[in-house]
Image (cartoon, rainbow, N blue to C red; front, top):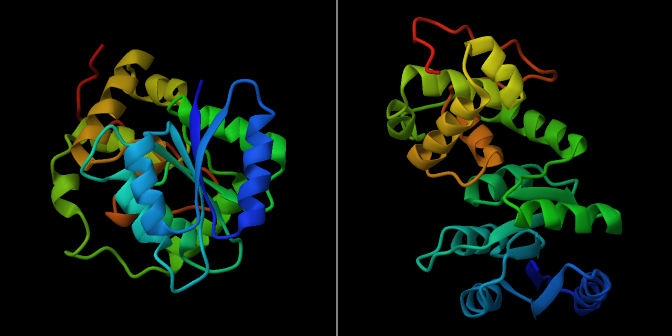
Length: 236
């Protein structure tokens, strides 16, 4: 049964989330935290499967808290599901870059939230279409990739791994990538696993953020064409 740590600076909201999760037979709220430092301590002590975290108002330590929970010194790290405000630019992008596994708007319906928690606990990643478009708009306003971005990690990828990562970032499924690159779907999954290890990401969502940030691919308002197979030989 997935366990959930609730992080929110408002007591009433924490209570609502707790009651919501308590009503789900397969989800277990194990604690509540009102701030970043408390959330990090409780995450280390309780080892929840998922941290349900609300991005606080500007000027607080929300993004650093996501980073400390998702990439701290005490593995295994919990999955982090962030509830982000729709308005302020950069929050969703910063949360992804810090290590969040899923992003949802604050006004997400209860059944959608519980479904997302289950998906994240199972190792999935969740970003609804509305926030995806906001991420694209944010990325479009970012400066071009420079030497300060993680080019060394990008350089560690093989040509085939770059092709697979570019395809993932363009929104293509494992089956579509496999068909285009003449690979078995299991081989594509193996490539994705190696890519995540090399770039220090935990999910496809974070791999997509890395692909944009490193300059490997550019954001599109619609799915871009699959990358050309190039000269790399298929591995079956």
